[in-house]
Image 1 (cartoon, rainbow, N blue to C red):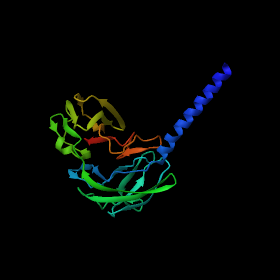
Image 2: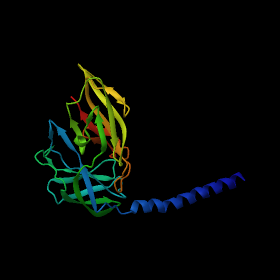
Image 3: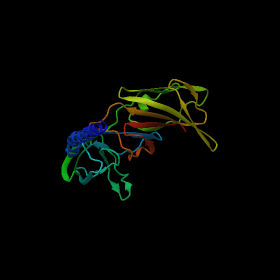
Image 4: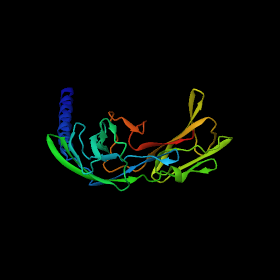
Length: 260
């Protein structure tokens, strides 16, 4: 009886392996694909009462991209842009071309600017030619309300990842009222302080009243609820950054309000 049971278990295990093989082979042999068109939104930066220069960048996500795939022969119809493979992400990053080892700070992205990125994906022993038309657009409003004390700063922060503003009252306590538009959700709000050489930070509740004495800035961490076409969560090899800050995936971003 025991011998019969062992034989049946072996047969069942073999059957499961056989049934699984076509699925694995099928998944590995699927052709990669990317959207025909994407719109990449870019943020601005407002400092010293001036809108600063900014660059256009963003991801083109690729369906059925193998983790071992190679991206080659990248071409752009706009000479100011190129694209590179992103480790741990099923995407290529469209970004401004480097001038040596540094970005070309003399060039600024234009609202409505376009480029077509074409490239080869080499995987499964085959080469696939893909292309995507990219349109750069000023970033939509993340916040429908951004108030600090008596100051309504909603229009000032629109489309920016950072704003420097020195006209806030540091006396008493100021109410923080920040609300996002429908495609975004706030994860946390953090206020940073400096007292001499000592730096501290405090997570606050939205709607609370806080002291801005010795405050240096307000960070609003948020994420989008709208996933780009073909987006997949990154693997463990991904290292994400948003203007210098670490993020767990490209859906997460942060806004910095400098009050010094």
